[in-house]
Figure (cartoon, rainbow, N blue to C red):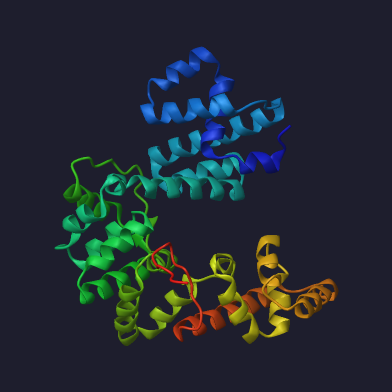
Length: 339
């Protein structure tokens, strides 16, 4: 019988299936008339796999569905600030913020959605002669791997300008988005909010750079470092996180572990998953692994900041060793490895 934690783990399609089932056959069939065939197929498949949901779980999912419907209606009628006022009165400030966060993310995903269906070459052809600011805005709305593919095809100077603008981008005017989207396609979808939507930013460009091939990455960072060293360093810091150790080969893990401070490893593992911990343990000596396990048991009341700092120091060691070609960091399947 699903509890709250299991409901939270359910996908959007699974929750939609639960809503469909609760509506009954007649109302569900009416709702299907307004849905795309692909969505009907996906939800019908989830309905078939759904199994048993108790009444409390069903009620929780329906309540979430009602809240999202109410949020979309409020945003459509009056924009985000109006919606915030309505939702705070109805559900409280915390729930209102959570609901608006989901809606603004959904809003961002609607813009330029047709571009995600286009191939990499078509995207490049459509964007290559646009201004860097325009290219940056469009790439901020599409999938990181496709954005990376477009950037890789640009001239070196254009690459640097586009990456810089994506990293420094904070929000986009709906009017500007509308004008540019109209230029890109006749399939323009109306923006239902007059408020700015978060796009681009350093985290996004770091995700893009993780998908760029190494030659383009080096060229972009060399130029960006000359132009804005601080920005280049901030992007680098976010390109590889502690959890990404799981993607590394065993030899590379063994290499960087040798340079790590034992105390940093203990702190870093305080918040690590069992899978990541085992990855590190199996690439240490038996004595070192036993020592760290013993220290973990007696290391208590640790501040999260100390854990984050320790993980960042380990990431710094990994990045330094990679720069010296002593270890390998796999990036989105872009690199071929010869054993």
